[in-house]
Length: 465
Image (cartoon, helix red, strand yellow):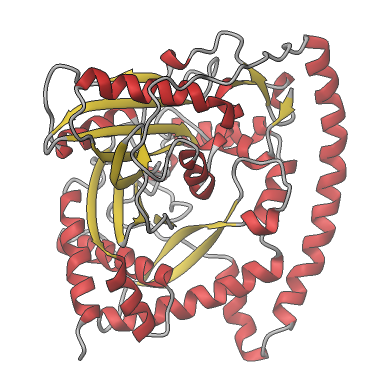
């Protein structure tokens, strides 16, 4: 029996019927000459043979009594790979748009907590002699970087596939008794009290240090950046359980050229594309637009976290970005300056601040807060926690293969937050960047416009003027 980290548990506790916190990717392969049955059979054999590399894919969640401390990972004694690898559209060919429509229907379906929190959907007949695998996982067991690491265990560097591959023998763990769960919970409560005191003292020391280690004229600006104040837009509302996924591709080299030319980072450019496209969308549809938007950017802390027992090793930047700018280059310049300040604050307070904070908040408290907000449709009248999310996960620059099929592209899938309703997820692979835009279509009815706006901003930024 193993406790979830506070951050992993927070992703479970924050989930509501309209805000399932599932992540994943649409993996598009060139399947060569394989038949539909051969394609599915190979994927099944591969997962069976390598599931030992992903031990938490065999485990389910057991809640602590009254939700006072983090839940526990416990082996599912009824686990079967066949219950998690599904064949979709077996008797007809579909195109990529239909695949994304299908992905938009399964992504917001909540997982059954009595079983491991992942599924693969194999679509063997996709237009252009393609095979697609949709990976869907709960955010509690994975973040962007660890998601790539998990997928890596299923990939090879060549197209060779051993059709006689055998699984590694697995010895089942003995499930915990109710007495063990209760005892562990009582001990965990004591740890919570000590951790809360430690975090409070540490934070009280660090925040003044952050503000005193910068020139006095920037203290006020840094202080305001530490407390972003999101405003409502014309698209702000409580979200529904409906999703739409829009994909787009562009060259990584173009983004790097823009970043290099303007002394910025790749992430700055992607954030500029997202902010600019969203501002353009709201203006075009005459929706209320405040003087700034707040973007939430997940930040990997895998290096800083060391041996922290967490599947999610992420923190977050909250960036207050103006909606009025002269052109895309001016917006990029502002974004770069804003992210530099935010990173300084983030580094000063400590990259593990959010992780440590989540350790001491009882899951039952988080669950009550998010359930109340959802049931009361709070964000129909209140400002959101942030206006949009931008995530970026770098992938490899070389060919990957799964069960002998060459990977062509990866389209990331991400959840959307209540009150926000839109997430820009970027993932690079072999010199290209794939954007997986996930929205609540009740809030963003014309999401297919976003790729056009992204291309317009890219074109403007690439001009030599």
